[in-house]
Image (cartoon, rainbow, N blue to C red):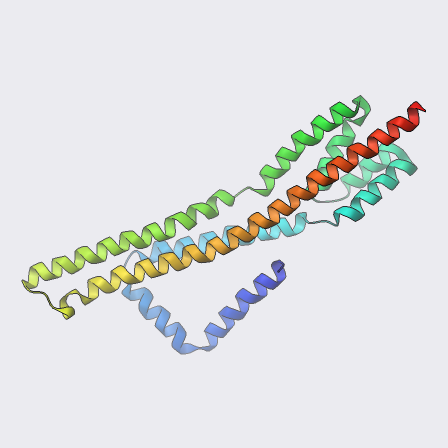
Length: 232
């Protein structure tokens, strides 16, 4: 599923929930009943999703038809030489084009220099693709921790209520236990939602990195063939 499908699914769920007044009321009631820790848990969800959608947007813009691009670069090398290939890479967006451009800039210095440039710039592009992923993992970790902290707070409130009443009764401890369970529930749900997005983003990044590595090998082969032709 691509970014369009994911975003469409999210908005469909939101639209369906908006049409169901009972579900929204239930969520509102449970959120209020969960106490103060529900607000940082909600903030973790909002911020985490913001980083997820930012990465989805960036990765989607970075996606190119690698096979077609490689064919175009080889044609440019054959017909117009290095300068034509450089111009093509400069006018094409995406990490593969950027890595190609870095390699072609050093091609005049030899295949070894071009290969080193490709490896170095490939690492830079990988860092760009993985930027902000650490924040998503941070909120995946923080959300359930906040939930468990709310659980501890709720249990403390339940025992304080027992102490004040000097007796054990379901009605006395109900509020504290409710807070404990709700914060845990919401914290785990937030973590699961963000984890799904994170795993999808990692798969997209791995695919782009694989494309870069495969394309880089083909570029080096193309430069080697050109060198052989010149030598002959």
